[in-house]
Image (cartoon, rainbow, N blue to C red; front, side, top):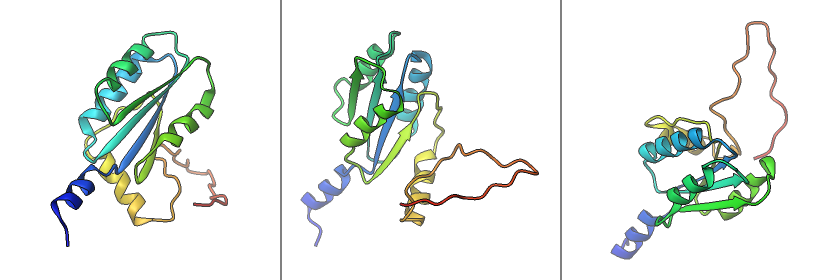
Length: 147
């Protein structure tokens, strides 16, 4: 039997944890965060990881996270490259983890499409909407992978 308390708990459950990696691209970061917030339609958390940016990025990240329990900032004093994503992933609490770069522009429905694919293939470990499209004579063969 569902109680008001269990319904509240379900509604608070984080469905999508997004880890957004950034380094010195404040203008692109602002567009990415703005479009993400305007289009995400499921309970989410946003973890923005910065690799020691020297531009306006740290200020933008701090502002995007201020006063929001579901936003976190990780501001590294040194550039850790792609490994910095791991720090964000370690903090994820959502059912699904989504890794993003700082040069994306999110369109309405992106999150529902992503979640539908992940739910349709429960053993899927990773999905990329930006995978290269094979050219006419190019042979693409999938390699081994694990979920």
